[in-house]
Image (cartoon, rainbow, N blue to C red; front, top):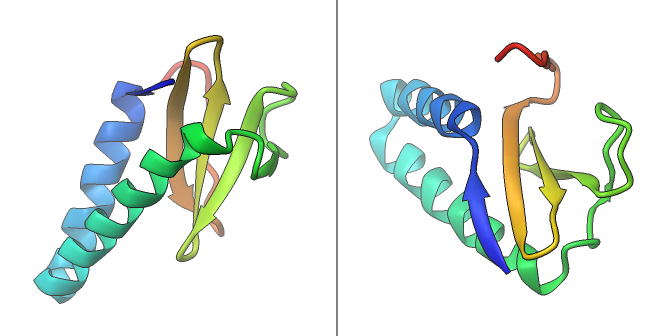
Length: 96
């Protein structure tokens, strides 16, 4: 299974890492590295995380990582990473 990242996720992830880096660059680098490692494990157990409470689709899952929610969708031959947000600030829309 391949992992595909939607542009929205890439943009949000970059903003989060930049925000963390304002406080401490080493923490931002560690966060980025660890999250990428966790994302790379999803294809091994794609149904490990609970069904999404934000998107009604049995193939869409919510992964929690250090206070952030990562929503991904299980496709036939790939995992599509849709979005990432702070658990306290969910922002989802079809237009983004």
